[in-house]
Length: 546
Image 1: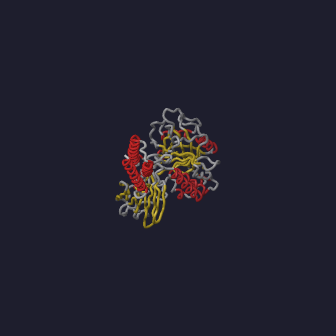
Image 2: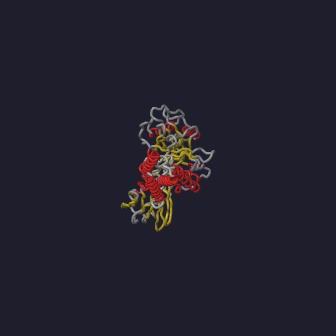
Image 3: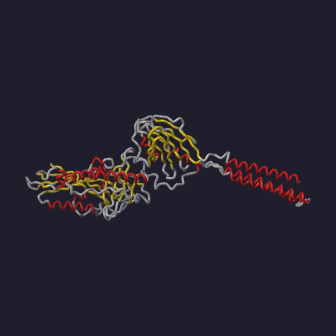
């Protein structure tokens, strides 16, 4: 029995040594690399665009992926929503880098050979310029399903020498249990050998067969338990990549057309461009960031002030702080964004409507109006700015269609009465316009004035609000026909009217054109509330003689 005990102790020491050696090996010789890397095979191609597909970013399984790009000269790397990148590339020739297992594959698609630069373009969440080499960290924590774009000068071949790397989640968690079990087995085996020697020196056969049975049973239990524990932990260490996901907090809403960094960048650019144009009184300088009614109204203001210095200047565009916003969702164009800003306590909040006509164009302000006193800007939904665009001609789910709402407002203004219809709630804008029309007729007894307000259906844009209603952005055209009451009578024009007419007096009828930008709230179907005017602005546009 003593020989069996010595054999068991020696076996335990041997198993412990082997187990300990295996644990050390897993932490040294067999330790997998901390990161995994993959490169584009045989990088080449003449396409002006390289797209690094969203699947490459997914190699990190929610963790950061490092993208290293090498090129002979200058290039741009930009990141955007995957669907936006696809739309921006459009018909252009491009090389697509995609994930294939733990490696990369590249395919080239023929097409147009020139593209604009994505650097600073509104469509992209971020962009970087580099020469020779660039390392970009592609984060998966913001929750945005994104792709990367690479271009050179727009016509030369885009970089394709690309390497990506990410943290290796195939670690060796089984090493620690092996080290612990190996050390324990060594100590236990050594202890058995030591006590076995001690028993022989004392010459006693202590414990008898019962003790020997207990030790043998204990040894078997330790060995079997060690094997089970080691095997269980090793099996449990296998990576479950499919079950992993991003744990980042992400942006407020990854499905909206613009993320917070884009909003800040766009508003800063708009404020800068418009501010410089205001200083120069240049309509051409406005065009990169203004179009539609906003461009026409501001350009007309510049023309008047060039001849009438005392005429009021338009309100400056404030980049922020942003008080409220509604950002369109979806993957279609044109896209509409409504931003409410206020630069200081002494100014009226501005409701700015920006439109992106196509993927490669920047957002332009199409409407800039002041928030009317006593009104509240409707929210897109809870704490998320995403808003669904609606058909301006459709009235499903609303008390009236958006275009019909604008027509109703135009009818109230044309009627020239302070009494409102059941469809339009009382507001400061209507009161001011009607009061102005009444005062003009009273102070010009020798002329006949007729005001007619009409809506412009082409410029109407609609976003759904959180309560099922709609925010309607539209424009009205106000034409005031002025005719002398007496034959041979002459009309004397105020300085701002003369600046546009080119004359100070007219013996023929004069048509004065005003642009009226409005923002309305149309309640959801079933509501008893009338439509509300929450923002408006009027600007003199033209004076023509018949």
